[in-house]
Each structure stands twice: as structure tokens, then as C-alpha cells.
Amino acid sequence: MKKYLLLLFLLLPALAYTQTAAELDTLLETQTVTVARAARFVLGAADLLPAGVSGTAAETAAYELALSNGWITKEASQAATLQDAAFLIMNAFEFKGGIMYSLFRNPRYAYRELIYRRIIQGRSYAAMTVSGTRLLQIIGSCLNYAGINEELDLLLFGVSN
Image (cartoon, rainbow, N blue to C red):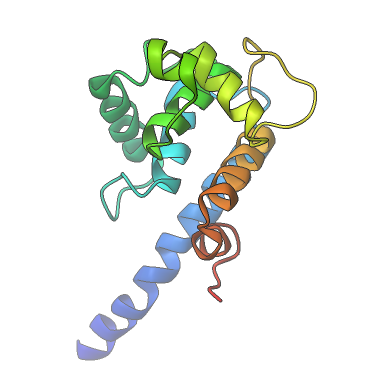
């Protein structure tokens, strides 16, 4: 009996990591990310989600948290745009914005702020839908900008420096 408990105790972290890896694989294959999934990965990167939550439960928890804070105004199943992702990032990471963002605090100016900071790079426009690959690139740039390189390595590769 003790052997089985020890085996379960040792395999539990591996199963949790497998779930995260499977979620990342699914995200990378996604052409258009939903608002709930974008919230799950942005709030997860900002370390705002409860520990041990993954999969659809994490998406639901992240969406409800973002909705209750006013960071999202769309339905969970709607496609996330770059301005939606930018507004989530600006709020989740508590970035201070420029004059226009400080005055109006809306997704459009959050998007413009992340363009200015070069967190969102390449050809883009505010209403462009976000793919899974692009979302991870933006989150990576955001973490790099915020100086959280160790958390980025842990999130993507499972190693710390």
C-alpha cells in the first residue's frame, strides 16, 4: 500500500506537467484563440490563477476573474483580438500606460501601448484575431519586458536558471 502511495505521489507532478504540455500543444495548433483561452494563458503567466487548476477549469476561472475585474467584455467563446489580449496583459501585469491609456483605459489604447513597448511586433491591427502561436509570442515578450525570464523558461521549457 505504501509503495502505491509513494508511486502516486511521485507521478502526480508529472501528470500535472503533462496536462500543461498538452494545453500548450493545443494552443500552438489553434488558429483563433477564444477569449477564455487567452485569459487562461495571460492570467496564468501573470500568476493570478489558483494553483492546481488546469484545462477547462482554468479557462473558466480565468475568464470569470477577468470578467469580474472588467478586463473582458466579450463572451468566453468569442475570438480574441489583439486589443483584447493587450487589455488583459496591461491589467494582469499592472503595466502603467501612457497619457491616452491612463485617461481612457480601454482595449484600443492598451493595444497601442503594447505596440509602443514592442511587446506586440510585426504586422498587426487592433481587431486582428490572435492565433495560439502569436499569443505565446506576445506573452513571452511581455514576460521578457517585465523581467520575468525565469518564469518564462519554467512555463515553456520546465527548467529554471
